[in-house]
Image (cartoon, rainbow, N blue to C red):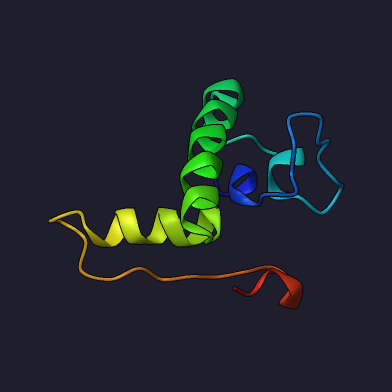
Length: 80
């Protein structure tokens, strides 16, 4: 799911050799459902002039069972 949260990654995106899911797709993800969710997140984020990541993090932090969120990125340019 994290793969689809990047706004510039579209449905036509193909995995690169260094992408984890290019070698081992676990846990299995329904990519079409994920892209549909990201489409809705993109609308919400656009209305509020924030990023999809900000909307996702705000939602996570509102869940009663979530105490904190740990972020990690593979490359420096992915840093929010």
